[in-house]
Length: 405
Image 1 (cartoon, rainbow, N blue to C red):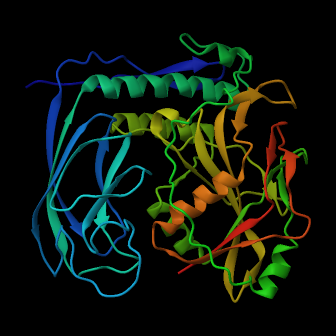
Image 2 (image 1 turned 60 degrees about the horizontal axis):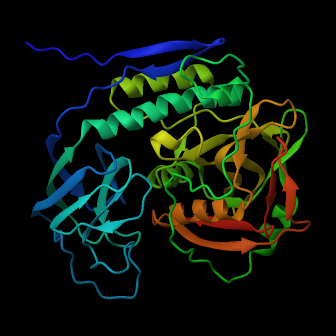
């Protein structure tokens, strides 16, 4: 019997462990085949097949039931499906948080990004049929691509731990930035993180007067433990917690780990299971005089440390028509810079913070779990400010208010 071991090392970085991996020695491409049944009910079905950029992907519709068909079905009405140019009810896919694409009964292409393969049906929030489609999936991958991504992830993890937790010791092979020298991203740098380009379907109906009045009482900005003002409040979600978390999961947002210890354990487990660690912890910030209730993030695995979309949400001390109201502050990390409070390395955010507000809304809109969304300009809006670490940002001051179905 032939045994294959996957080796994982924990290297000490100051007082914190850092995940690193033994380098791979890639050789010839490998081919893998999978069989998957895609039900019509969920918005997306996770195949649990992790793709790398450049992987050859082939998907073939084998059979269908319950009125479903991989090439779509006839549908009357004016509802707009997820992929507007594709037939209603056709099999569609997406990789990670990337844009949706038509699959149909036969699809062949190269993966454009890293992430798990998701399959679903092209419709709005309703199931287009009452059955499923069985598909065969073939992936031809080059091990060197995977090894390169893993190497980037391990190196980035060392940089992130040093910048986030202020560890001053440089680990072997770590970037010079971890020694305490700021390494800001170039102004014209393009993030490796996937973002959606879907335009928002925003209602022009004025916000309910009582909800608007309550939102005017919400602090415009969050703060750190020392009361330094930071990120602005830029979105609101109305609905129960279970539906909120279901929508975020469907949009591929990952709940951030709460502690460093949890992060290290999850990183090791994900590596053992041949997955990528996507739940780096985020710092604690405060609104309503208490820490965030949840933190969520979205990024390509190898870019998670230096470039990630993320937000924090707090349950508001008021409700609207009996529904909980969640207040959010979202930003997009695009690199590293010096923390003006202590001179250590910290994340640099994209100063055009309205872009992250749009990204959050677009990812949720694609799930079909949003009833409506509208913009609201509160009293005393934030337009130009600096966060708690000293980074500047600018905005039109509006909140994106989203109502769950």
